[in-house]
Length: 444
Ligand code: ATP
Image (cartoon, rainbow, N blue to C red; front, side):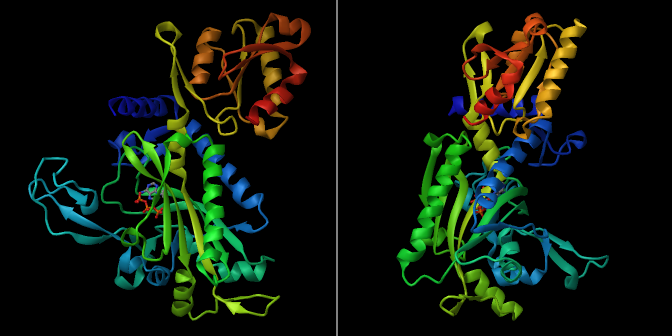
Protein backbone atom coordinates (compact mmCIF):
# COMPACT_ATOMS: atom_id res chain seq x y z
CA UNK A 1 0.00 0.00 0.00
CA UNK A 2 2.85 2.40 0.87
CA UNK A 3 4.41 1.57 -2.46
CA UNK A 4 1.09 2.20 -4.17
CA UNK A 5 0.77 5.57 -2.46
CA UNK A 6 4.26 6.49 -3.73
CA UNK A 7 3.12 5.58 -7.19
CA UNK A 8 0.11 7.85 -6.86
CA UNK A 9 2.28 10.70 -5.55
CA UNK A 10 4.73 10.23 -8.44
CA UNK A 11 1.88 10.42 -10.94
CA UNK A 12 0.36 13.52 -9.35
CA UNK A 13 3.72 15.27 -9.36
CA UNK A 14 4.51 14.19 -12.94
CA UNK A 15 1.04 15.36 -13.98
CA UNK A 16 1.69 18.82 -12.58
CA UNK A 17 5.31 19.14 -13.73
CA UNK A 18 4.71 18.07 -17.31
CA UNK A 19 1.32 19.68 -17.81
CA UNK A 20 -1.24 16.89 -17.57
CA UNK A 21 -3.22 18.03 -14.53
CA UNK A 22 -2.96 21.20 -12.42
CA UNK A 23 -4.75 22.03 -9.16
CA UNK A 24 -7.78 24.19 -10.03
CA UNK A 25 -7.65 27.98 -9.44
CA UNK A 26 -4.18 27.51 -7.99
CA UNK A 27 -3.11 31.19 -7.89
CA UNK A 28 -6.00 31.84 -5.48
CA UNK A 29 -5.01 29.03 -3.18
CA UNK A 30 -6.96 26.47 -5.19
CA UNK A 31 -10.53 25.26 -4.89
CA UNK A 32 -10.88 22.00 -3.01
CA UNK A 33 -10.88 18.99 -5.32
CA UNK A 34 -11.01 20.92 -8.54
CA UNK A 35 -8.45 20.21 -11.23
CA UNK A 36 -7.55 21.70 -14.57
CA UNK A 37 -6.09 19.78 -17.48
CA UNK A 38 -2.89 21.21 -18.95
CA UNK A 39 -1.75 20.89 -22.58
CA UNK A 40 -0.76 17.22 -22.34
CA UNK A 41 -3.77 16.28 -20.22
CA UNK A 42 -6.07 18.01 -22.69
CA UNK A 43 -4.56 15.94 -25.54
CA UNK A 44 -4.81 12.68 -23.59
CA UNK A 45 -8.39 13.39 -22.55
CA UNK A 46 -9.36 14.30 -26.07
CA UNK A 47 -7.78 11.11 -27.40
CA UNK A 48 -9.74 9.04 -24.89
CA UNK A 49 -13.00 10.71 -25.88
CA UNK A 50 -12.26 10.42 -29.59
CA UNK A 51 -11.38 6.73 -29.26
CA UNK A 52 -14.67 6.18 -27.46
CA UNK A 53 -16.75 8.18 -29.96
CA UNK A 54 -15.15 6.41 -32.93
CA UNK A 55 -15.69 3.01 -31.40
CA UNK A 56 -19.18 3.31 -29.96
CA UNK A 57 -20.78 5.90 -32.25
CA UNK A 58 -19.04 6.26 -35.60
CA UNK A 59 -18.22 2.58 -36.11
CA UNK A 60 -21.66 1.33 -35.11
CA UNK A 61 -24.79 1.50 -37.23
CA UNK A 62 -27.02 1.09 -34.19
CA UNK A 63 -25.78 4.07 -32.14
CA UNK A 64 -26.15 7.79 -32.81
CA UNK A 65 -24.45 10.57 -30.85
CA UNK A 66 -25.98 13.76 -29.48
CA UNK A 67 -24.91 16.70 -27.30
CA UNK A 68 -27.49 18.18 -24.96
CA UNK A 69 -27.76 21.14 -22.59
CA UNK A 70 -26.16 21.09 -19.15
CA UNK A 71 -29.16 22.84 -17.60
CA UNK A 72 -32.49 21.22 -18.40
CA UNK A 73 -36.08 21.94 -17.46
CA UNK A 74 -36.32 21.05 -13.73
CA UNK A 75 -39.28 18.82 -14.52
CA UNK A 76 -36.75 16.42 -16.04
CA UNK A 77 -35.28 15.82 -12.58
CA UNK A 78 -38.73 15.43 -11.11
CA UNK A 79 -39.53 12.70 -13.63
CA UNK A 80 -36.16 10.97 -13.40
CA UNK A 81 -36.44 10.72 -9.61
CA UNK A 82 -33.29 12.76 -8.99
CA UNK A 83 -35.09 15.47 -7.03
CA UNK A 84 -36.56 12.94 -4.65
CA UNK A 85 -33.81 10.36 -4.35
CA UNK A 86 -30.46 11.47 -5.76
CA UNK A 87 -28.94 11.95 -2.36
CA UNK A 88 -26.30 10.59 -0.03
CA UNK A 89 -26.61 10.26 3.76
CA UNK A 90 -24.73 13.16 5.35
CA UNK A 91 -23.40 13.15 8.93
CA UNK A 92 -21.48 15.79 10.83
CA UNK A 93 -18.71 15.17 13.36
CA UNK A 94 -19.93 16.64 16.66
CA UNK A 95 -16.41 17.71 17.63
CA UNK A 96 -14.93 19.40 14.53
CA UNK A 97 -18.07 19.74 12.37
CA UNK A 98 -16.49 18.04 9.34
CA UNK A 99 -19.10 16.44 7.11
CA UNK A 100 -19.00 12.96 5.70
CA UNK A 101 -20.99 10.44 3.75
CA UNK A 102 -22.35 8.12 6.42
CA UNK A 103 -21.89 5.07 4.19
CA UNK A 104 -18.18 5.82 3.72
CA UNK A 105 -17.34 6.46 7.35
CA UNK A 106 -15.74 3.84 9.57
CA UNK A 107 -16.93 5.23 12.90
CA UNK A 108 -14.02 7.62 13.43
CA UNK A 109 -13.73 11.18 12.12
CA UNK A 110 -10.74 11.24 9.71
CA UNK A 111 -9.96 14.89 10.63
CA UNK A 112 -10.09 14.89 14.44
CA UNK A 113 -10.61 11.31 15.57
CA UNK A 114 -14.02 12.16 17.06
CA UNK A 115 -16.45 9.30 17.43
CA UNK A 116 -19.76 11.10 17.76
CA UNK A 117 -21.77 12.11 14.76
CA UNK A 118 -25.08 13.82 14.09
CA UNK A 119 -28.06 11.85 12.79
CA UNK A 120 -27.70 11.13 9.07
CA UNK A 121 -29.79 13.36 6.83
CA UNK A 122 -30.31 12.93 3.10
CA UNK A 123 -28.34 15.49 1.12
CA UNK A 124 -29.35 16.01 -2.51
CA UNK A 125 -26.28 15.99 -4.75
CA UNK A 126 -27.63 18.21 -7.50
CA UNK A 127 -26.11 21.67 -7.93
CA UNK A 128 -28.83 24.29 -7.77
CA UNK A 129 -28.89 27.56 -9.64
CA UNK A 130 -31.40 30.18 -10.80
CA UNK A 131 -32.43 31.00 -14.32
CA UNK A 132 -32.68 34.74 -14.97
CA UNK A 133 -32.13 37.60 -12.56
CA UNK A 134 -34.67 36.74 -9.85
CA UNK A 135 -33.46 34.26 -7.24
CA UNK A 136 -36.85 32.80 -6.41
CA UNK A 137 -38.25 29.30 -6.15
CA UNK A 138 -39.99 29.45 -9.53
CA UNK A 139 -36.64 30.01 -11.24
CA UNK A 140 -34.67 27.19 -9.62
CA UNK A 141 -32.76 24.97 -12.03
CA UNK A 142 -30.11 22.27 -11.69
CA UNK A 143 -26.87 21.41 -13.41
CA UNK A 144 -27.30 17.91 -14.79
CA UNK A 145 -25.96 15.20 -12.46
CA UNK A 146 -25.72 12.74 -15.38
CA UNK A 147 -25.83 13.02 -19.16
CA UNK A 148 -28.39 10.21 -19.46
CA UNK A 149 -31.52 12.36 -19.19
CA UNK A 150 -30.41 14.32 -22.25
CA UNK A 151 -30.83 11.09 -24.21
CA UNK A 152 -34.18 10.13 -22.69
CA UNK A 153 -35.84 13.47 -23.36
CA UNK A 154 -34.64 13.37 -26.98
CA UNK A 155 -35.75 9.86 -27.88
CA UNK A 156 -38.70 11.17 -29.86
CA UNK A 157 -36.58 13.74 -31.71
CA UNK A 158 -33.97 11.14 -32.59
CA UNK A 159 -36.62 8.68 -33.82
CA UNK A 160 -38.39 11.36 -35.88
CA UNK A 161 -35.22 12.70 -37.50
CA UNK A 162 -33.19 9.54 -38.10
CA UNK A 163 -33.75 6.15 -39.59
CA UNK A 164 -32.91 4.21 -36.47
CA UNK A 165 -34.43 0.84 -35.76
CA UNK A 166 -34.76 -1.12 -32.55
CA UNK A 167 -32.43 -1.97 -30.91
CA UNK A 168 -30.57 1.33 -31.03
CA UNK A 169 -28.48 3.49 -28.78
CA UNK A 170 -28.10 7.21 -28.15
CA UNK A 171 -24.68 8.27 -26.93
CA UNK A 172 -23.30 11.42 -25.41
CA UNK A 173 -20.05 12.73 -23.96
CA UNK A 174 -20.35 15.64 -21.61
CA UNK A 175 -19.96 17.23 -18.23
CA UNK A 176 -22.00 16.27 -15.19
CA UNK A 177 -22.10 17.95 -11.78
CA UNK A 178 -22.57 16.46 -8.34
CA UNK A 179 -22.21 18.26 -5.08
CA UNK A 180 -20.30 15.32 -3.59
CA UNK A 181 -20.01 15.34 0.19
CA UNK A 182 -16.54 13.85 0.26
CA UNK A 183 -14.72 14.30 -3.02
CA UNK A 184 -11.04 13.47 -3.31
CA UNK A 185 -8.28 11.20 -4.45
CA UNK A 186 -7.02 13.49 -7.19
CA UNK A 187 -9.33 13.37 -10.24
CA UNK A 188 -11.17 10.25 -9.02
CA UNK A 189 -14.07 12.05 -7.36
CA UNK A 190 -14.71 15.67 -8.22
CA UNK A 191 -17.81 17.83 -8.23
CA UNK A 192 -17.55 18.46 -11.93
CA UNK A 193 -16.58 15.60 -14.22
CA UNK A 194 -17.23 14.20 -17.65
CA UNK A 195 -19.19 11.13 -18.63
CA UNK A 196 -19.42 9.01 -21.76
CA UNK A 197 -22.80 7.30 -21.73
CA UNK A 198 -24.99 5.21 -23.99
CA UNK A 199 -28.69 4.60 -23.51
CA UNK A 200 -29.26 1.43 -25.49
CA UNK A 201 -32.94 0.82 -26.24
CA UNK A 202 -34.46 -2.60 -26.67
CA UNK A 203 -37.95 -4.05 -27.12
CA UNK A 204 -39.66 -4.77 -23.80
CA UNK A 205 -38.15 -8.15 -23.03
CA UNK A 206 -40.52 -11.11 -23.03
CA UNK A 207 -38.32 -12.82 -20.45
CA UNK A 208 -35.09 -12.21 -18.52
CA UNK A 209 -32.90 -13.89 -21.12
CA UNK A 210 -33.81 -11.23 -23.66
CA UNK A 211 -32.40 -8.28 -21.74
CA UNK A 212 -29.63 -10.36 -20.21
CA UNK A 213 -28.28 -11.14 -23.69
CA UNK A 214 -27.88 -7.44 -24.52
CA UNK A 215 -26.51 -6.78 -21.05
CA UNK A 216 -23.82 -9.44 -21.65
CA UNK A 217 -22.88 -7.90 -25.00
CA UNK A 218 -22.27 -4.54 -23.34
CA UNK A 219 -20.38 -6.18 -20.52
CA UNK A 220 -18.02 -7.70 -23.10
CA UNK A 221 -17.76 -4.38 -24.95
CA UNK A 222 -16.71 -2.63 -21.76
CA UNK A 223 -13.96 -5.17 -21.10
CA UNK A 224 -12.78 -4.88 -24.70
CA UNK A 225 -12.64 -1.08 -24.37
CA UNK A 226 -10.53 -1.33 -21.22
CA UNK A 227 -8.08 -3.67 -22.94
CA UNK A 228 -7.85 -1.48 -26.01
CA UNK A 229 -7.07 1.73 -24.14
CA UNK A 230 -4.39 -0.01 -22.10
CA UNK A 231 -6.15 -0.27 -18.74
CA UNK A 232 -4.33 -2.93 -16.71
CA UNK A 233 -6.86 -5.77 -16.72
CA UNK A 234 -5.15 -7.39 -13.71
CA UNK A 235 -6.43 -4.43 -11.68
CA UNK A 236 -10.00 -4.69 -12.96
CA UNK A 237 -12.78 -6.62 -11.26
CA UNK A 238 -16.56 -6.67 -11.34
CA UNK A 239 -18.96 -5.98 -8.52
CA UNK A 240 -22.52 -7.19 -8.78
CA UNK A 241 -24.41 -4.42 -7.01
CA UNK A 242 -26.94 -5.89 -4.56
CA UNK A 243 -30.52 -4.71 -4.79
CA UNK A 244 -30.45 -2.45 -1.72
CA UNK A 245 -27.42 -0.55 -3.05
CA UNK A 246 -28.65 -0.13 -6.61
CA UNK A 247 -29.83 3.21 -8.00
CA UNK A 248 -33.56 3.76 -7.82
CA UNK A 249 -34.07 2.93 -11.52
CA UNK A 250 -31.96 -0.18 -11.87
CA UNK A 251 -32.94 -3.84 -12.08
CA UNK A 252 -29.36 -4.99 -12.40
CA UNK A 253 -26.06 -3.13 -12.08
CA UNK A 254 -22.49 -4.26 -12.48
CA UNK A 255 -19.77 -1.88 -11.37
CA UNK A 256 -16.44 -2.32 -13.09
CA UNK A 257 -13.91 -1.79 -10.34
CA UNK A 258 -10.30 -0.70 -10.65
CA UNK A 259 -7.65 -1.33 -8.06
CA UNK A 260 -6.56 2.28 -7.44
CA UNK A 261 -3.71 3.03 -4.98
CA UNK A 262 -6.42 4.28 -2.58
CA UNK A 263 -8.53 1.14 -2.85
CA UNK A 264 -10.70 -0.87 -5.19
CA UNK A 265 -13.23 1.65 -6.51
CA UNK A 266 -15.78 2.06 -9.25
CA UNK A 267 -14.41 2.88 -12.66
CA UNK A 268 -17.49 2.27 -14.86
CA UNK A 269 -21.05 1.04 -14.50
CA UNK A 270 -23.50 -1.03 -16.50
CA UNK A 271 -27.17 -0.89 -15.56
CA UNK A 272 -30.48 -2.20 -16.82
CA UNK A 273 -32.73 0.83 -16.33
CA UNK A 274 -35.87 -0.96 -17.59
CA UNK A 275 -38.49 1.47 -18.98
CA UNK A 276 -38.27 3.54 -15.79
CA UNK A 277 -37.09 6.77 -17.39
CA UNK A 278 -39.21 6.80 -20.53
CA UNK A 279 -42.32 5.77 -18.64
CA UNK A 280 -41.88 8.58 -16.15
CA UNK A 281 -41.12 11.13 -18.86
CA UNK A 282 -44.27 10.06 -20.71
CA UNK A 283 -46.34 10.52 -17.59
CA UNK A 284 -44.83 13.86 -16.60
CA UNK A 285 -44.59 15.43 -20.05
CA UNK A 286 -47.80 14.02 -21.47
CA UNK A 287 -45.89 13.23 -24.68
CA UNK A 288 -45.98 9.94 -26.49
CA UNK A 289 -42.51 8.41 -26.29
CA UNK A 290 -43.48 4.99 -27.58
CA UNK A 291 -41.85 3.26 -30.52
CA UNK A 292 -43.83 1.82 -33.39
CA UNK A 293 -42.32 -1.33 -34.81
CA UNK A 294 -43.00 -0.99 -38.54
CA UNK A 295 -42.77 -4.75 -39.13
CA UNK A 296 -45.03 -6.04 -36.41
CA UNK A 297 -47.07 -2.87 -35.98
CA UNK A 298 -46.53 -3.17 -32.24
CA UNK A 299 -46.24 0.00 -30.16
CA UNK A 300 -44.26 -0.07 -26.92
CA UNK A 301 -42.11 1.86 -24.47
CA UNK A 302 -38.51 0.82 -25.10
CA UNK A 303 -36.44 -0.59 -22.25
CA UNK A 304 -32.93 0.64 -21.69
CA UNK A 305 -29.50 -0.76 -20.93
CA UNK A 306 -26.94 1.82 -19.93
CA UNK A 307 -23.18 1.43 -20.07
CA UNK A 308 -21.46 4.44 -18.52
CA UNK A 309 -17.86 5.55 -18.42
CA UNK A 310 -16.21 8.43 -16.54
CA UNK A 311 -13.67 10.29 -18.66
CA UNK A 312 -11.62 11.45 -15.69
CA UNK A 313 -11.52 8.05 -14.01
CA UNK A 314 -10.50 6.56 -17.37
CA UNK A 315 -7.65 9.03 -17.59
CA UNK A 316 -6.53 8.17 -14.06
CA UNK A 317 -6.75 4.41 -14.67
CA UNK A 318 -4.85 4.81 -17.95
CA UNK A 319 -2.09 6.81 -16.24
CA UNK A 320 -1.84 4.29 -13.39
CA UNK A 321 -1.68 1.42 -15.86
CA UNK A 322 0.93 3.11 -18.05
CA UNK A 323 3.24 4.51 -15.38
CA UNK A 324 6.45 2.46 -15.22
CA UNK A 325 9.77 3.00 -13.50
CA UNK A 326 12.72 1.12 -14.95
CA UNK A 327 16.39 0.71 -14.08
CA UNK A 328 18.44 2.09 -11.21
CA UNK A 329 20.62 5.16 -10.57
CA UNK A 330 21.78 6.86 -13.76
CA UNK A 331 19.95 4.25 -15.81
CA UNK A 332 16.64 5.00 -14.16
CA UNK A 333 13.83 6.10 -16.38
CA UNK A 334 10.13 6.77 -16.01
CA UNK A 335 8.04 5.64 -18.96
CA UNK A 336 4.37 6.21 -19.60
CA UNK A 337 3.58 3.14 -21.65
CA UNK A 338 0.44 4.65 -23.11
CA UNK A 339 -1.29 3.14 -26.10
CA UNK A 340 0.34 5.09 -28.93
CA UNK A 341 -3.04 6.38 -30.17
CA UNK A 342 -3.68 7.93 -26.75
CA UNK A 343 -0.23 9.52 -26.32
CA UNK A 344 -0.32 13.34 -26.16
CA UNK A 345 2.51 13.45 -28.75
CA UNK A 346 2.68 10.69 -31.35
CA UNK A 347 6.35 11.34 -32.07
CA UNK A 348 9.12 13.85 -31.37
CA UNK A 349 11.66 15.25 -33.83
CA UNK A 350 15.13 16.37 -32.71
CA UNK A 351 18.02 17.99 -34.55
CA UNK A 352 21.17 16.31 -33.17
CA UNK A 353 22.70 19.72 -32.42
CA UNK A 354 20.92 22.97 -31.80
CA UNK A 355 23.71 25.19 -33.12
CA UNK A 356 23.99 23.65 -36.60
CA UNK A 357 21.49 25.54 -38.78
CA UNK A 358 21.52 22.87 -41.52
CA UNK A 359 20.49 20.19 -39.01
CA UNK A 360 17.80 22.38 -37.51
CA UNK A 361 16.40 23.27 -40.95
CA UNK A 362 16.32 19.63 -42.03
CA UNK A 363 14.69 18.50 -38.77
CA UNK A 364 12.05 21.19 -39.14
CA UNK A 365 11.37 20.05 -42.70
CA UNK A 366 11.02 16.40 -41.60
CA UNK A 367 8.61 17.45 -38.88
CA UNK A 368 6.41 19.61 -41.07
CA UNK A 369 6.28 16.92 -43.73
CA UNK A 370 4.94 14.50 -41.11
CA UNK A 371 2.51 17.07 -39.76
CA UNK A 372 1.07 17.66 -43.23
CA UNK A 373 0.56 13.92 -43.71
CA UNK A 374 -1.44 11.37 -41.70
CA UNK A 375 -3.54 13.27 -39.11
CA UNK A 376 -3.31 10.28 -36.75
CA UNK A 377 0.32 11.30 -36.19
CA UNK A 378 -0.55 14.70 -34.74
CA UNK A 379 0.77 16.39 -32.74
CA UNK A 380 4.53 15.95 -33.10
CA UNK A 381 6.84 17.36 -30.44
CA UNK A 382 10.01 19.35 -31.07
CA UNK A 383 13.01 19.38 -28.77
CA UNK A 384 16.51 20.74 -29.29
CA UNK A 385 17.63 21.20 -25.68
CA UNK A 386 20.41 19.30 -23.91
CA UNK A 387 21.73 15.99 -25.12
CA UNK A 388 19.77 13.33 -26.97
CA UNK A 389 19.70 10.99 -23.96
CA UNK A 390 17.95 13.63 -21.85
CA UNK A 391 15.49 14.34 -24.63
CA UNK A 392 14.60 10.64 -24.83
CA UNK A 393 13.95 10.58 -21.08
CA UNK A 394 11.78 13.68 -21.28
CA UNK A 395 9.65 12.07 -24.01
CA UNK A 396 9.49 8.67 -22.25
CA UNK A 397 8.01 10.35 -19.22
CA UNK A 398 5.09 11.75 -21.22
CA UNK A 399 4.59 8.61 -23.30
CA UNK A 400 5.79 9.73 -26.75
CA UNK A 401 6.05 6.44 -28.68
CA UNK A 402 8.86 7.39 -31.07
CA UNK A 403 11.75 9.88 -31.19
CA UNK A 404 13.24 10.83 -34.56
CA UNK A 405 16.74 12.29 -34.68
CA UNK A 406 18.14 14.21 -37.63
CA UNK A 407 21.96 14.04 -37.73
CA UNK A 408 24.78 14.67 -40.22
CA UNK A 409 24.15 11.43 -42.04
CA UNK A 410 20.58 12.63 -42.72
CA UNK A 411 22.00 15.48 -44.78
CA UNK A 412 23.83 12.93 -46.96
CA UNK A 413 21.40 10.06 -47.41
CA UNK A 414 18.02 11.27 -46.09
CA UNK A 415 17.86 8.70 -43.29
CA UNK A 416 17.08 9.32 -39.61
CA UNK A 417 17.17 7.28 -36.42
CA UNK A 418 13.88 6.25 -34.88
CA UNK A 419 14.08 5.33 -31.23
CA UNK A 420 11.30 3.23 -29.71
CA UNK A 421 9.88 4.27 -26.32
CA UNK A 422 9.23 0.75 -25.06
CA UNK A 423 12.28 -1.18 -26.31
CA UNK A 424 14.72 1.77 -26.40
CA UNK A 425 15.93 0.30 -29.70
CA UNK A 426 17.08 2.55 -32.48
CA UNK A 427 16.79 1.89 -36.17
CA UNK A 428 18.04 3.83 -39.16
CA UNK A 429 15.27 4.44 -41.65
CA UNK A 430 14.63 6.53 -44.74
CA UNK A 431 12.70 9.75 -44.14
CA UNK A 432 10.27 8.59 -46.85
CA UNK A 433 9.48 5.50 -44.73
CA UNK A 434 8.60 7.44 -41.57
CA UNK A 435 4.83 7.66 -42.17
CA UNK A 436 4.64 3.90 -42.61
CA UNK A 437 6.82 3.10 -39.59
CA UNK A 438 4.99 5.56 -37.32
CA UNK A 439 1.66 4.32 -38.71
CA UNK A 440 2.64 0.79 -37.65
CA UNK A 441 3.53 1.98 -34.17
CA UNK A 442 0.06 3.56 -33.93
CA UNK A 443 -1.59 0.16 -34.34
CA UNK A 444 0.14 -1.36 -31.29
P1 ATP B 1 -19.69 6.48 -7.05
O1 ATP B 1 -20.33 5.26 -6.45
O2 ATP B 1 -18.19 6.41 -7.18
O3 ATP B 1 -20.20 7.76 -6.44
P2 ATP B 1 -21.75 6.37 -9.01
O4 ATP B 1 -22.16 4.95 -8.93
O5 ATP B 1 -22.57 7.42 -8.36
O6 ATP B 1 -20.21 6.54 -8.56
P3 ATP B 1 -22.61 6.66 -11.70
O7 ATP B 1 -23.80 7.44 -11.34
O8 ATP B 1 -22.76 5.25 -12.14
O9 ATP B 1 -21.52 6.75 -10.53
O10 ATP B 1 -21.79 7.50 -12.78
C1 ATP B 1 -21.23 6.91 -13.93
C2 ATP B 1 -19.72 7.11 -13.99
O11 ATP B 1 -19.38 8.49 -13.85
C3 ATP B 1 -18.97 6.41 -12.88
O12 ATP B 1 -18.73 5.06 -13.19
C4 ATP B 1 -17.68 7.22 -12.83
O13 ATP B 1 -16.77 6.78 -13.84
C5 ATP B 1 -18.14 8.62 -13.18
N1 ATP B 1 -18.32 9.43 -11.96
C6 ATP B 1 -19.40 9.44 -11.13
N2 ATP B 1 -19.23 10.34 -10.14
C7 ATP B 1 -18.03 10.93 -10.35
C8 ATP B 1 -17.30 11.96 -9.67
N3 ATP B 1 -17.80 12.57 -8.60
N4 ATP B 1 -16.09 12.31 -10.16
C9 ATP B 1 -15.58 11.71 -11.27
N5 ATP B 1 -16.24 10.75 -11.95
C10 ATP B 1 -17.44 10.35 -11.51
